[in-house]
Every structure is written in structure tokens, then in C-alpha cells.
Image (cartoon, rainbow, N blue to C red; front, side):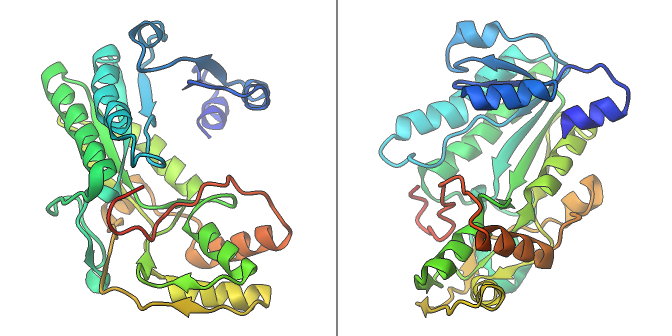
Length: 294
């Protein structure tokens, strides 16, 4: 998206992707679209220092799945590394991903946690993500780095997301646990667009903004819709809890643009994709987890 936007603006901006491991297929795909790829272990100072100077940084490095039992690596990736990146790119504008997991669970009918609400991360993953926010804020203040913190909750595309988790259970005939009965969903493309627009709104101290869909979705209702679209029966276990990890995305919509893809379109696209046997990333979101253990 960043590459296309730059090209349409007749801008010769470099778009660079950095990752520790870059499979040949991904390298070929990115390079064919004019995106430079750099292999680097960001926790290695020599690799981090060797990265080129850039005016804009989208910071996405993180660890979530598999964090239980590897807590020290989780904190290194989610907290320590953010400080290293800020020190390295103190001349840049930085938009850093955070997560709605830094909030407390809120009542289902509350409309979701807002940016100024008290925080209450549950578990080491969520606490380490709050640590990332604290590092970015500290270096933003001390080094005068224009920055933004994007609290995402939750991005969905055809191969990944809460909607994919639910539809796969419907297709497999597996009962759906309702203990976490409600969630937010935003189309990945809409989340990406909001993230890139945030580069225009960076500040010192950092702008903090939720990126979330406009609706509070019901797991039961979404599963029933998939059941109808796919002509598959659906069964449930448990009952809905009165609270959930929910974010209020209104500030983000006003500042960064309202999502173009609504809940009905997302559900239809995801149902059609999996009806035709489309591939998944094989990474369940674990949105049902309530104790912070990922």
C-alpha cells in the first residue's frame, strides 16, 4: 500500500521492509513490486546500526504467540527492542504498533475502551506491550521524536483473524466457546491505511490512537451468519461473559479515516474464501484467551 501510494504520487520514495528471515518467495514478491528487502536481526546492534537512515519508520516488530514459557524473549522483543529502535532512528518519525491488550476488559455494552481510559494489561505479553509504549514515549520525550502509538484490535483478512478462527470451527463442525462472546474486527487493508495516515499526525509525546472497527461483534451472531452462508450447522458451549477486551475506535476514525469495509462485507468475503478452500496462515488469534497466556 505504501509503495502504491508513493508511485501514484509520482514520488521516488524508497520503501524498505526489514525482517530477520525472508523466504525466497516473499523476497521475489516484494522486489517485483519495488520494495527493498533487508535481512536483519534487530536485537543485534550491528544489524540495527547498519540499516539506512529513513524519514519514516513503521515499527511492527513484536512477539505474541509462544510468549508463555519464553517470557524473557517476549520482553526483549516487545519492550527492550523498542528503545533500541528509538535510539537508532531518533531523527525519524515513528509510528509503532501497540495493541488493545493494554486495556482492561470492559462491559460489552460500554462501546469499548477509549484512549484515555485506565490501562490494565493482563499477562506478560500485554504488560510487555505496555512496556513498548513506555519506551517509545520516553524516547519521544527525551530525544524529541515525533511518534504515534497504534492500539490495534483486531485486524482481519482472508487468511487470518477472529473471523477466520470462527469460520474454520463452523466448517469443521466444532463447537464454539462463547466465554469470550464479543470482539472488535477491522479489515487489514483499512488498518494499514490508518497506520500510514498516522505518519501525518505524529507528536511529542506520542499520539495514542485506537485502530478498531466501529462495531462490537457477537461471536454467536457471527457464527450463525457463517452457518447460514455455508449451509453448515453450528453448536455452542458456555455462555457470554459480561465483559471483553474491546476498543472504541471513534477517535481513530475521525483522525485517520473511517474503515471502508464493513462487518457484512468482511463476513461474506471470509465465508466465500473458506468455502473455496482458500489457504490460511495457520495462526489462530487466541482471542478467546482471558488470562493473558499466549
